[in-house]
Amino acid sequence: MKLLKKITSILSAIFLIALFVLVVSMQLYPEDTSRFIGYRFYTVLTNSMEPVIPTYSLVFSKMIDEDDPIPPDTIVTFQANRFGEDILLTHYFRETQIGNDGNLYYRTQGATAPDYDNYETSRSDIIGTYVFHIPYLGKVFLFLKSKFGFIMYAELFVIWLVNQTIKTRWDEKAQEKRIKKKRPFAITELSMEEHEGCLMLTGYLENRMKKSAKYVVAKLTFFDSEKNIVKEDKWYLVGREPLKQNEKVPFTYTITEPEDVKDFEIHIIKYKH
Image (cartoon, rainbow, N blue to C red; front, side, top):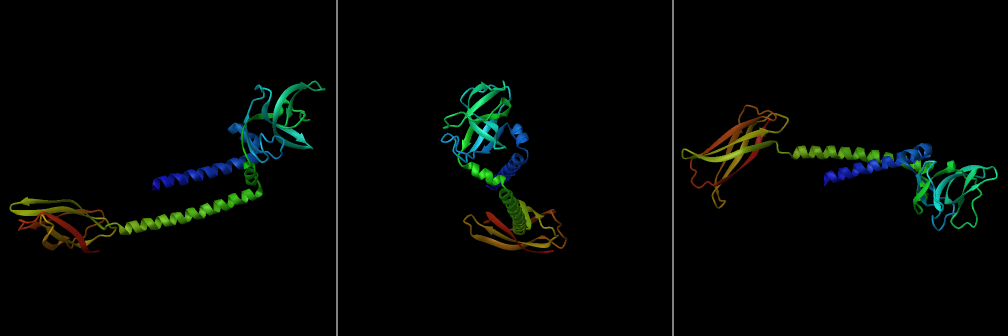
């Protein structure tokens, strides 16, 4: 679960960064970015293509080469000059015509317009062919491209940075708690075997603390087959010689009257540094 959350967090961060880079690139270098990804998207600001493409839709167009054929009645995205301003439009391409100047022009038309557009659209003006649109998402795209959108990106980045700082600190505290809860000693390779009429309890004690330890005392409890206590004792697993960090030493405890002993428990009860 923790791994899944971490992967989700990383993927979300990558997506947001990629979206930010894409929006900034489309704002600063629209031509280069479009050629790189092979598509261009922009917001429809007029109702000339309604109801086919509603106003404020986000339109996705596939970039095409200048020698690619365009069948009539294809929806295309093209550059046009309207009132002295260069804009992008997405209209139907209807047919080609030879103009009075002898040049070939591509005649375009809005979805419900009775006549062709007045633009003298040449083949080089056509950027791509319409692929699909997402209604009203263009408003969001316009906001992201605006100065307020960039302010929002900055705020989100600051929030993300603060969140990561807090999360890192929480993780450090959680790690500290786990270290504190971690048992200072490990008792391993425990075995209880019969030897010359006695029972020999043997094992290894490992110091998991950063400090050395000495006078490590364990409480030993022995049970019969019905889990009744047969015997209790305290035993020094380590004496005055310090047990260093990660050092492991063997210990042995002998039970001289083992008749009823079937099981045991061992717990560290005290030690000194």
